[in-house]
Image (cartoon, rainbow, N blue to C red; front, side):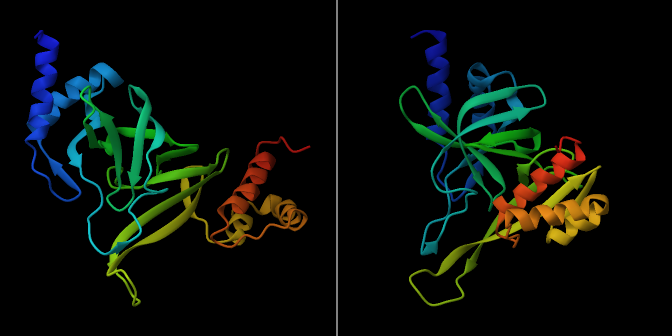
Length: 245
């Protein structure tokens, strides 16, 4: 048995001895070894691994799930200050505000590992781009924001979930409730995007053009119509960039 095989055997022996608990657990000694092995695969950045193993959502009579999209693994790319990690399988647990990495070992054992979100600058999950929510005091605990529109104005959406006692009779005792917040980020300012008037007040010089676009495109800009709001911000960015013809 050569040195490399012996090293891998030691890593996964430590993982096998880790007690199973709900959601996450830290194990620094195993993590240090695991980080060294991950460096050989994903690049030289040992801060990507958080030191916590992830065991999924709590079990019981619960409706829903804690993830941003759904319960399936998504293709992901993660950017840190000094490395890019691609070809990943990830989930974003918005109840814990934790990015989860799926790792399959050489013996086909599957592990779920929490990533060090404080070191993540941006990421792509499926076809969506995420950045740390800007202009917040605590970059460690701030949620990631999905970039719906990019340009002079960024249209950003954050989602959070909490596990609560269900407020109606039925099959479930608990449910994951989702909270969505929307923002415009412009000139270093993070502005809550409540309705179209937010945009008109921010850019009064192009208000008439924006209103005409809404009428001509038959946009219905209620809070949950994120795609239609994105079209309006795309057009706003076109005007601000001077590319409107």
